[in-house]
Image (tube, rainbow, N blue to C red; front, side, top):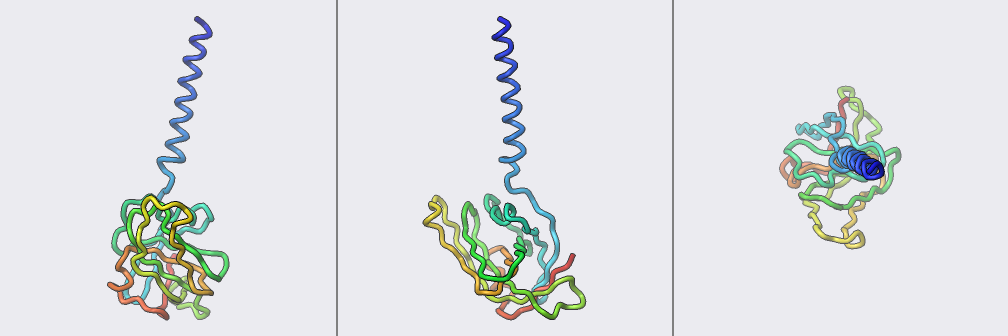
Length: 167
């Protein structure tokens, strides 16, 4: 009888532990990140900042939607070719490749230039890893902005446009 009580209590403790692990890591696997504002031409975007490898690998995966004039800004420690995919994405996006601008604007903390973009990157439900499209940036990209599909066209974003980042 005593062994049975110990087993029951042990099972309950394991179940509680598993619940907390699930709640902490799985149910909140893609939390909202700190937000800042960036401006491209006259369009202002409220963006989440993905600066760590874990945040960048998660990206917008698993999210159900992205509201207009919001997005995720990926900040890299180096300029170069950046590669993105649509793993576990539930909606299409525009991907904007941004390079550092050597002459930062006085009214922002940082500025860059649009070096290129991908419009309407499609979702790939049920695709295996090796089947996913890889989107490679041009060389010299130090940050990447993911926004709702159609934003590039709607806001008339072009290569060479200045991007200002505000803290």
